[in-house]
Image (tube, rainbow, N blue to C red; front, side, top):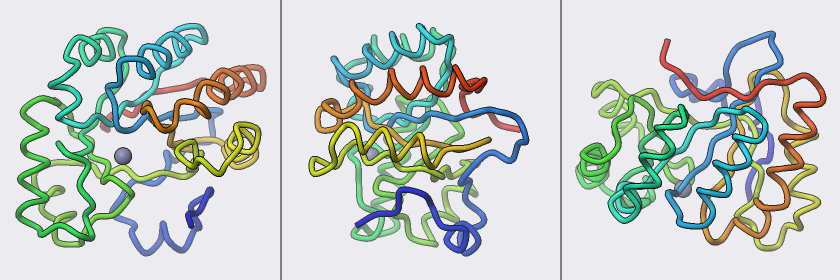
Length: 206
Ligand SMILES: [Zn+2]
């Protein structure tokens, strides 16, 4: 069970986290979690380039270690990177100290002031610790559901096209599991919103 569109009350309860970008402009913030991946990430980079789009990649430290050239390619192309822990830890099942250590471990390989908790799950105390370290904690406005093997590519695409609007932060995954949906949905989403006059931007610190 998950929300495709994050409800306003959830954003309100956890207002110290970033859920969307406040703007009246036609801007979308595509984000890609769990990479770098040897097939999915280069695919995403090619698609973004074809539409002159920028995105944000919330990387796992362990994957950056395994695929450093792909990580460098993300940066070289002007996209934003973020920290997504070293080992994709679940913040509701991990002690504060172990969690924060794992983020630090990823920080050794990922230079970024952005952090996204895996599964969107983070304890309050860990959230405070990471903010104290200077991280902006980025959640999302629209969850594509690309990771959901029960969701067809067509419905995954519908999730994004129906729910995204000005300033939406949208979650995709450059991962093995999500690739069957991603490879269908991403080009269509880029095409649909480009035709509607949107631009795709990477997250930036204010
Ligand atoms: Zn993740």
